[in-house]
Image (cartoon, rainbow, N blue to C red; front, side, top):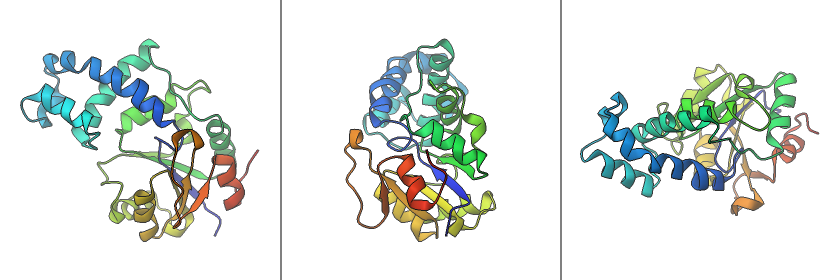
Length: 218
């Protein structure tokens, strides 16, 4: 069945993994002590000692909502000051624009907070892409490796699961999405060294996704 809507991951799918680990994480880490000292309300869900806890979560790349929220707040200053410009794979912006023009509904689901997702897509070399997406989802809807998360997203956007295509580089996330009835495709980006799945359709880029699922492509 041809997809009517697309749900996309970010890291390793639309955005190089290196950008997250080379730019975003170091930027947040360098400013974390100052953020903790500010006493921001977002710290309420972080156990003491807060700085050590946050840095430990970052070292382990924990997908904890409180951490992702705080990182997003710190990154906001970086994007707005021009210190950070989001990196997207070159095939992503034109594909998203083609799909949106063709009437496909586009959504984002990432472990990064919704505000951080909007900052990333709002500050790209290709311009502000945020309006191409109809909704954004983070771990508040549930973990990305749990089937119920995808069922809840499909229900929330009023799309039948079998008409919703999920794009991700992570096999375990694709497994969960497929178990909830979604169509799935793994992005196997050469630059990220992703290992191709034997359980899901694979694509090298968004144009390849389009060709394999009958979507508009360049």
